[in-house]
Length: 309
Image (cartoon, rainbow, N blue to C red; front, side, top):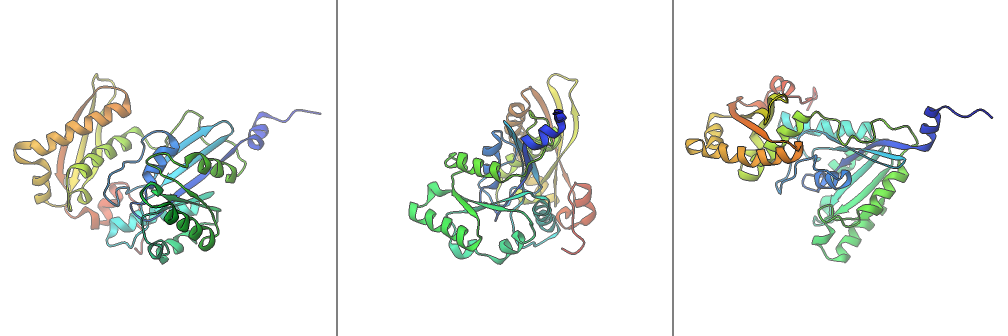
């Protein structure tokens, strides 16, 4: 009997697919993505709504390649930016081969049963698995009730996990792998992300701003890499932090430039760790008036805004 071509062997021998991580803001989706991939790809802060754009993380082991899509939290959109964030989550749900709903075990059951989450899940024509996260923060009985809710209300497999501590991750990973369709790998086995390095560098600067500022400042700042010179040592990286108002620019820069210098120092350490190379970070702050509510500016910044938010 003739031997099958390598491509047909691969298609039959491997499992591959897109796994959309969805859930309410601050459920722990980004922490879970980082844990599942084994590298920090999505920024994580204690504040809600830190993830603004879809982040793709890839985990390949043996004959399985899981392509995780971390998404902004499911919420009621209050402006065009949030409408774009919600559209990013909806797009991931439509593309998914498998939906991983992440729920916060510390939230009351009535909040987990919100219509916005259930309506979003209806967009996906794919199997679903539920990760009941933060079980290390609640009594065992509370976690058990949340798991039972997921099984009965959503008719899904459910797992108790702590993404931060790594509890319950392997059984969840095994279930995800088993549920993926048979297909050839879509990425080289050694890749862990699909976005360019510039995206992650800008996100690390934004994460640092989230960590160091309160109230409206973090939610009014978007960062973009303007220059990335790999032919220099240290690497030269120029990043612009765009704010909505001149008053925010003054706050971010700080007295005598102290604020932005502190952000730059902390962000540089993160970027050097991520790149594995010394970096000269040139950080600037510019005002982009009302960018969160301006369709043209959002599009230029890389967001997809739906026509009818």
